[in-house]
Length: 158
Image (cartoon, rainbow, N blue to C red):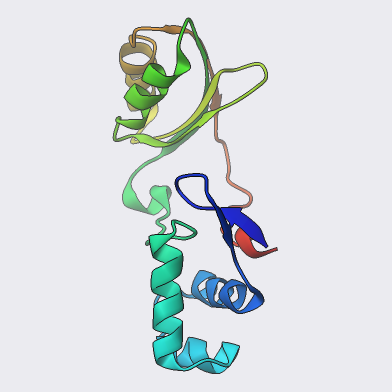
C-alpha cells in the first residue's frame, strides 16, 4: 500500500505494518508482545515498527470518546463558504476547541467542519457568534446529527 507521510512524501506500508495497524485498531492498548505473536514478529520489532508508523504520521494512537456519554448532546457538520483565501478561515476554525475536524472540499462548500457542543444553545453560539463572525466566512449551512449510525476507524487498512 503506497501512502504519503505528513509532508506529502511517498511512504510504503507492507502487509506486516498493515497487520500491526489492524491489531492496534482493535485495541490501542494491546501489548507489543501480543501483537508480535499475531503478526509473526518479536516484541522489539513491533515496537520499532509502531514508532516508525507514528513518526511518519501514518497513524496515531488516541483514546476515542463518545461525546454523548461526556455531556455533549449536540454534534453537527457545518458547511462553510468562504470569500477569498480559504486557508486562514480553515486555520481559525481548526483552533476552536469545539471543532473536531476541518476539511477543505471541492463542491457546494469550501469547508466542512464537524463540531461537538454541549447543547443547542452552545451550537447556536458556535455558528452565530464564532463561525459566522470569522473574517472571510460568507455563509454556513448546518447539518445537525440526530443519530450516529456508524463511526469506524478501520478504513486505513482495507
